[in-house]
Length: 609
Image (cartoon, rainbow, N blue to C red):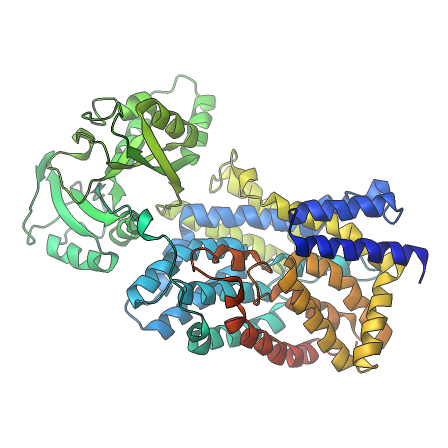
């Protein structure tokens, strides 16, 4: 063994041990490995940070930003309502949710796709009277499988494509090269999860959920021109609201509030419906009937009517501010300065630029309009405004801010714009008109210009530890290849296990990658195994694409532990899971992946190049 090979394998072994130890974050370990390679003379100092400009890294960052646009605009929420069956049983409901997660994961960050659908999964579990984990784990596994279908679906695909691009006389993979194996694999996996898999998940109760039940809110929603609700009778609207467990408790017409309106009364455009609903159900209620939150409507109208002496610069600042609005729940403390006062009394909107959207008060209802409602200690207030202003307001008035609500009120215009931007970026990359990194960077620029993502928050959308991890490990993977260490490891694996058989060698690479990805980060696994897979193909004299695709599939399929993939980690707490709960469904899914992926790899990426 050569000196350089000994050095790189020692660094690699130490890196894997530190990944498994978990004492430091993965990106920190990756940077340590990179710096160790530089100090050992395995990576040129001038090329140490070339990974940050690598197309794979740029593409990952851009896809994360475009995913944020789809999330914040409510585009995914609209799709969710259209796809999920309303009153189906467990198998059909889980199948629809899992299929939707897989579809979204192919074109946006799969962690983002899971985060968007988790609240839907918890609500679905409640409707089906199942423990949350029995829906959350199938959802997480389906989102992982869906990432295998496209180039941008998951970081391992981009890493493998980037590694191939760095080889002489080779280029990166196209957008849908992964679909040939990934799509049939995902279909088979989702079918298994829906028919059998969810039944294997341990029935764990979600810990501590009762303490976070904030009760129903009373809010006001205006019926705009063209709304579905306009012209309907109140009883017809209430039938529509049954599914969301919401109800009408009042009607405001011509500034006169009716606390118990007749069910036969016809709703007109301009009326204000007083609704009682859980906070998570508000977006669904508003989108279902085409309603607008009254306070948000009034604020928007006032903003349009204002004269802005600052001119274009003032417009720009106002647009930036409106893009940064969040929703936050505040609980009113006994000594709060808000006690006994209303939103109108303190000039909430004109003085502070905040909107009071809804109030939750121990099930009690008031005859007063929302803006004139006298606030009491213990009330829960759902407020909208800039994060810093809300935090300052809570401190000044003696309120306790709860966790920021990830509540998205769908914006039809922005949802369509965000979807079109993503489709155009994917189409341009898929047809080869522009490289993927350039296409998606253009999509990010369009998202900022059209404000589906706020320019002030665009960098918040990027998962920087993932970006640093990828950028740091790419030169390390290159060092494994250039020193011949990857060929050495591949030869040892093939001589001891495959004994020169290419099909067995392919299975060894696939299974080894799947084992490693359950123990350390999937992106790190792809970076480590890509050069080994290439070396194995060279040793056997077969098509390297077969082995690189096996690495991409294996690195993505982490189903046995909560640490192998971020999606598995995300459901650990909400599902009430223990470390050993994952293998019960994970082992059958792993076996299915091996049984389906191997013949598909040999069919679509034959060993004879």
